[in-house]
Image (tube, rainbow, N blue to C red; front, side, top):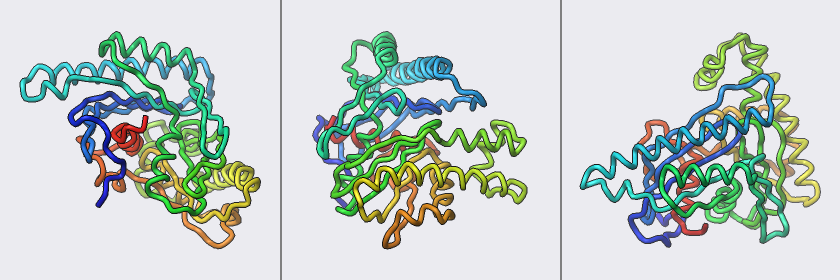
Length: 321
């Protein structure tokens, strides 16, 4: 089987990858330069769900979480450098940071070109933290959408696709046709909205709400789940219709990209809702991208692989950024 992303790097290079979105921050050390990149020291720090969301408080939480995870990566790298056989693994040579809205703004200038504008206060502090903890490394910042674009370029056909990347507070919608992004937008609803619904209307704690999504939901929660599924599906339909209506594209497939187990739940919510069916003129499918789908292309050490970090590592390994 051919590699998902072509190799261009010199073999045997360790980089740090940082994933920053609105519901969590994640970090991993990635060994790149081979057909199958390897991840180690993976860790995701999920934020407590606030019933009232403020931009300043969220930004402060992101900065604190970023600092904590970079310390984790630095400590792991230092331990690796302490042993002769693993010394090269601990030699970090670069850092790639992937940002989700609202920390980055994506403008679709044309069918072939995107422009991203990162939040300066966040990028400057992150760069400073990396240099203080990991040394004077080359640091690059990228929007989340770039990983989706490369995935579609290599795995999809020339049909029309809608890709929904669901983060804590925001869902990004990317429309692809003939493997090129032709429309892009966001809607202010993410998986934290589901958790808030379970906490406030299901009378659950934060931990109970997260745990419930990993198991079969008991009967007494069905009304809460169904109400939110209806709200999410209609919100997504309204946003997607605005993007697809201007292009008149024959949509066939919707990809859901989210942390597990959220992706599977959101995919089922869409399938169960009749409103979303009107987007498919000739029938279609909704699929959730899971870490199991990427495991043949990237190795991980975590018992619960992070599909977002895996996608980002595959892109970095390709040398396209």
